[in-house]
Image 1 (tube, rainbow, N blue to C red):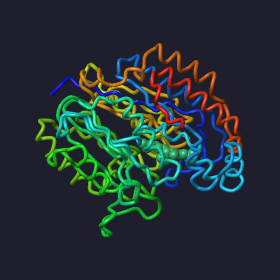
Image 2: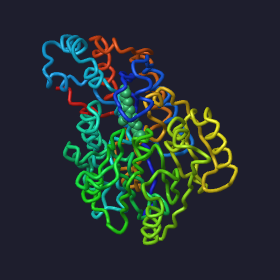
Image 3: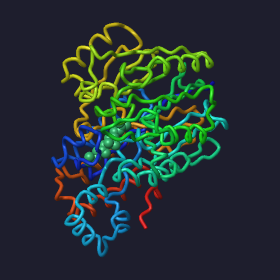
Image 4: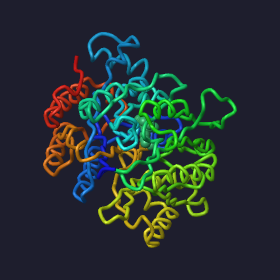
Length: 447
Ligand SMILES: N=C(N)NCCC[C@H](NC(=O)CCC(=O)O)C(=O)O
């Protein structure tokens, strides 16, 4: 065992944040299609969360945005000429694909990769596999930059292994850490990894949703467990309840979150709740940890309330005093049932004794809550020293980034702005400066 700390790598929201309704199955994304966004506010809301959590002593870092628009995508499908020509013709002929090329979706870094800490892997290294996100066109290219970014931050191969994304085909649909939870006595101890999938490609009799797509397959989860060299006795694969995918639970982190030995989840989260708990208990027994389930039943909070409030898309963070804080979005307060539930939860003096609330409205309107916005990486002190230090959140970095956002970001984007060549120039200039701020001179492939 080592004294591990969990770093949360939040996605820095990119300057093209917009509402294009690209995620069928994600109720908020569809509901806000074509409304005006405010990229400046979105980035500042995300930075405020990072700053506050860092100031409270949590280990906080960031993942940079990706270069947009994705001209490579647009040119590959036949839009040619100058950049301005490409944008103008795509706007006329394929506005939805144009929006895909502009999407700032890499901000939801819970989908960037699956991460296994060194305590769990066969070779004592931290393993990352970038998620192929192949269910949605606008997210399907993210893995290339995600892999590049992770290699830039975690380039020390003695401590880290960054794997390429799985083959981009429906059998290996992979959405990263949004469908993965690690349970352990503490972050540095050996743990149990829970992979939650929505369908099984090669078993037509396995449960699957009828209305909305299941983005994660069992085959993808198994491949990642193999790549990361996880011990079979400490790995649990669980089927998500397909009925809730059809109600808008497009990732498991919309209905469950775990931290240390606590699993906070809705009673309808899994296809077979009792079996999942039994397997987790048995596996945790093997590492001397005791599962502490915090189960929410439908009478207290319906699935619909969970989806609109994002109660379970909270971050569950261990505090130095041993208790846990739940990092919730404002929307939880606006929902009566959820607000009432939360009051009781902290009053009960159980594992979770504090609520930390943030306004993340810009991200929430695209279906991204506090937990979507962060990738968890548990690191030993030596591993933390071996990673790139320029992305660790400090007061000084916060101040530089707020100034950078103020100078480069617009405060309003509408669908028609995606045809504006000037916006593309602004985005490129912003990222050029960001590479200097983060001390990552080769972060982007600008060729
Ligand atoms: N639950 C987690 N971990 N992540 C949330 C991701 C939200 C994202 N929304 C979008 O991609 C909307 C983009 C748009 O419609 O413009 C998605 O559906 O993949």
